[in-house]
Image (cartoon, rainbow, N blue to C red; front, side):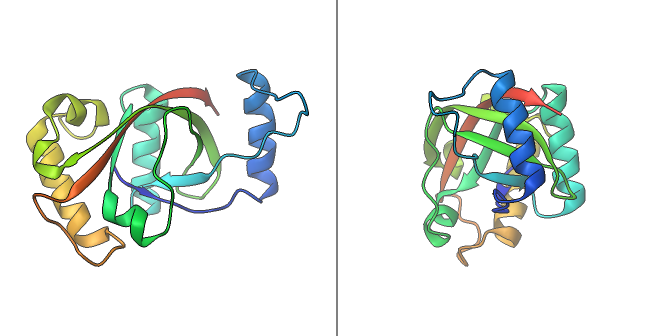
Length: 164
């Protein structure tokens, strides 16, 4: 589901996680000083973050969606293929490193069943995805516009690089 970003990249626990993860995936730059990726948790509540993180760690969740309007409202850059992110649990502890492997922006009405399945939630059906995400965007979007069937949605696919 959409990300509720918590910018905690300066904490010692996140930095320690990143140090281990980058050695595990062998991404040390020549200087040895790779910047810490953004750290955030899925969903709108700690329980939701834990539930969605469990799906990521199990390999069931390999996609997410965010209202494009939220990126603009929060002055956040759009995700790019190759971006890394540290996923936090409901207590804001680092638990996974992911890499974005695909990014598309489409109207909500044009999200397909394959993307819904890759999000890994509920029964993994398009109907479930549509219902849950419509409610989520209506209640939790930060941009103040709520939900619209034609609203642009940023669809990201990712792969798990390092679990903890």
